[in-house]
Structure formats: structure tokens, C-alpha cells
Length: 297
Image 1 (cartoon, helix red, strand yellow):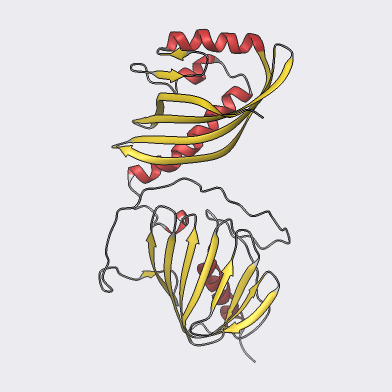
Image 2 (cartoon, one colour; image 1 turned 120 degrees about the horizontal axis):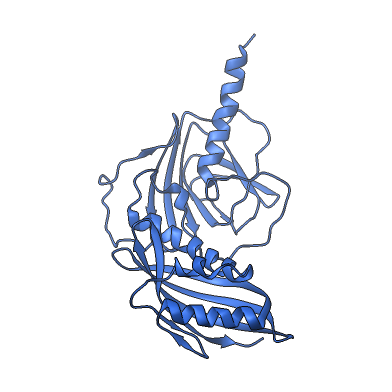
């Protein structure tokens, strides 16, 4: 009789392969029965450095005892070469999962049984499977050795080396949260001091369609007028793109839908905004903030 350990080990290896092949969406793998809509949010862009890499110039990254990979990132695409050795799946149901990233995978060596959105097929070298955002999918490894090419968009930031991101990488990710937190302040009528802590003290330029602000004092006066005339405000971000503009300096290009009641009348406004955000120690602060009409709804 086989020992419990020998029976359990292949199953654990299969789970490790599933995790590696399609990976978690920002650290989370999903296997529930939900069918989410496709997600076209481009996410935060971390600018890539143009490069040419020889076959022996990047070492294989060890994922587990049987799996290695090489990962390459451009601004919007993650490309992965995945190599699995000695982890042939003995059988059992395919564990399906999904993630926000679009994925295309191509078999270079070995065979897999693939399930995409309920359709199932065995493919070998030259075979390809296409997985749009949030579509359920999974594989079963059928051979001793397997080599795949995977492409994802937006980038798989969870595939970047842990603990080796530059401060720029971390800050670029933080800017997206900074933007969302900024609009959340307006949605709850936050105290003015919470805004001022996010604005530079010197060289501030905030240009709205109706007024231009250049100091904390200007912002205080403008915000007091907002509190007196606007109620029930909400901001829905349509797009947010963050790019590096210098050492610890970032440009934000976004579109946001503002809806509120102004002097008793419901109104809405679709705005295109351009920001310049500076990193100051552990904090981020807005230096330039340009608002223009993207269209009224």
C-alpha cells in the first residue's frame, strides 16, 4: 500500500504547476464559479528599459523543485518562458481559474490537456491556447517535460522579483493608489488638511475650467466653496495611466466621471486630467493638476 505522502505529493505538484502556468492576479488565484466581465483596465504602467538579451544572459528563475521560468516585461506585456521537468500529471480533474490578464500560451515542447471556457483539447508542440480576461482555464501536464511560452497583458507585476523592485517601481504602483485615494477624499468631504498634505507647498499649479490655484490658501478658499454648493459628489475613474517623468517624478493621465448635486441640481462632468506627482521621502504630492473637459454626459 502506498504511503499517504506518496499519494498526496503528485497532487501538490499539480497545484504548483497550475499556479505557475497562469499565475495569480496580483497575488491571488481564483477558482470559484463566478464569471466576471472582461477587464480592460490597463493598470499601472512601469516603463521598461529597451534591451536585447542573449540566450545565456538571463538565468532561469526557480519557481519550485520542478519548474523554472524566464520573465521579460515591456510597458504593457509580460513574456514568460516556462520549463517544467519531472512533474507529469497522473490524472484527475483540471483545476480551473481566472485572472484579469489576457493570456496567450504556446507549447514548445511536451503535451498538455487544456480547458478554456469549458472547451477541452490535447495539444503538443506548435499548439496554442488563447485566454481573454477573466475566462476560466487550466491545464493538465501529460509529459515528463514541458516548455511553454506565455504572454500576458497588462503586465504580471506579481512575476517581478520579490524584494528587488527599484524605488521607482514601488512608487509607480503607489501613484495609482494615491490617485484613487485623492478622489475618495472628495466623495466623503474630507477635512481640507487631508488634501493639503497631498499638495506641494511651493510651485503648486492647479488649473480647473473655472479657476487656477497656486497655493494652499487658494485651495482652501476653492474647497470651501465646493463644500457650500456641492453635495452627493462621486468620482468614477474610467482610465488611469502612470508614467515616469524623472527621478521620483510621475505623470498621471486619467479620465474621471464626476457626478453631484450643485445648488440643488443634479449634474455630471467627464473630465480629462493631467497630473505631475513628486515623491518626497515616503510621501507623494501633486505639483501640477490640469483639468479639461472630456465631454459632458
